[in-house]
Length: 394
Image (cartoon, rainbow, N blue to C red; front, side, top):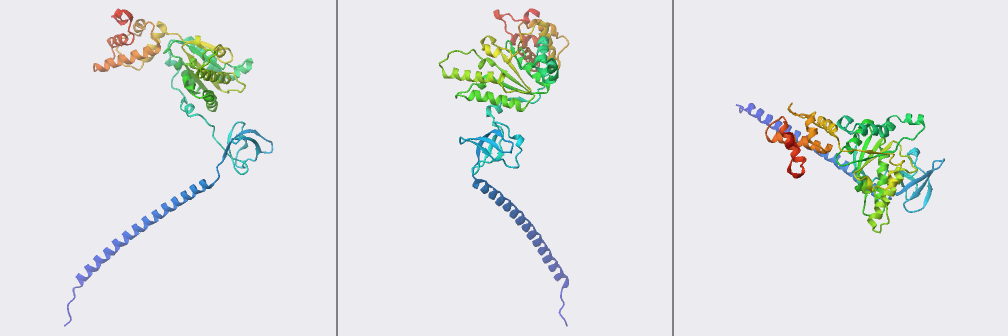
């Protein structure tokens, strides 16, 4: 008799072996994909290394400046190595971009213009505050109605409606100088003008222009106005201008002579041969008596606008502006607060409102009361003789 064979057992073994083979196939496919990815990554890395090697083997370029562009398309350049040369220009370069003074890259072999380089600006100039469109408006400034009218006529109108000056036949004002005690709104007024004209606002403190090495301050002034022209229409606000605009004298100290060099460059930019375009200058100082007379003559700063400490009506308007977005109880009167803060500046009034809010927070309240304002006034405006301004109104 034939031997009995268990085909069922053989079938299950074969099925198990097939599953193992399928699993192994999937693993090999996954491994194959991984190797393909690794191959692509290595090829990209090889290509990047080849590109880097090509860059390293290319001879370095020479930096130069365009002096003139000829009618036949060639250019006159002043190379960094010294001589002035008449060279060819690469066909891919737009000749209209080759203006006098433009930085270009020159070939070492034939000094041809290969590339137009970006304008070089000092890192300190780049770090200056550039606000594309300030959010401060004239409605955020209180107590300076006459000053706002003057600065609109002198700065805003020439930027928005220059055709009016052309029809009348006069040159628009170049700049204004704001003078007054600290904290009275000189910076706010300049930002409001930039907001009204949709101009770029560039703020610089004049002391930043005073540098250690000879010629550095003058170079920064040139690059500051170069930045302003590139972002025109723009408003350059020079705060504390007396730091570089002091009266000139016969100084033997090298530091003072460097300040004078910076002042001379500033005078040249304010009233030089090169047109500034849609660039307006607003200066600010607390000590106008220290400024050099050459800085104050018409043609540089055409008008001096005094920004005084606000009177009682001005203080009331400033309180209303700051309290418009504060949660204040109905018992608080802006008229009384204005009477209690005689001599306070706009910055001090803002500090009083902030301090009053802090007193409410310390007492776990979300409403600011009259008592909070009295305490804030006592703290921020300490009077001589130990008697506070708020105590006389309690």
